[in-house]
Image 1 (spheres, helix red, strand yellow):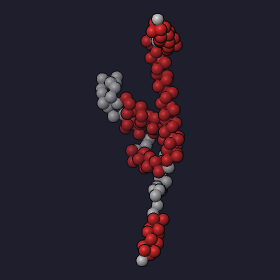
Image 2 (cartoon, one colour):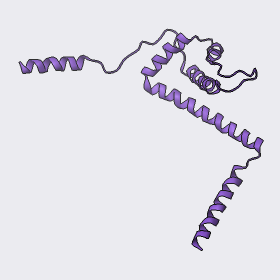
Image 3 (cartoon, one colour):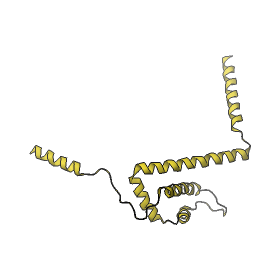
Length: 140
């Protein structure tokens, strides 16, 4: 009896699939377009609480992203579910989005620093000099 129960347990255990497979949607959004859309979506979410030129705040810009790519939210949702089931591809997509966001962040920092007249190298040199002087004062 124990052997039969163990055998049935093994059959049930190995017949269960641990990985969920989603069928590829007929109108799957390409990987490149997903990267562009997710990049724009991150920007849209990040800027939603900023005041725009019409003095509006808390505006939802997501509809503008869908409009830009001529894609509706249902098609995006189906494609997103498909890519999330393929974690390696989804990770590649998000790494590229993060890389592009980092480039934008660095560009914006450089523009802000130039507007404010901030020289990062001079600031760093000044901080190092101050820390060296403090260290010398402590030795005295």
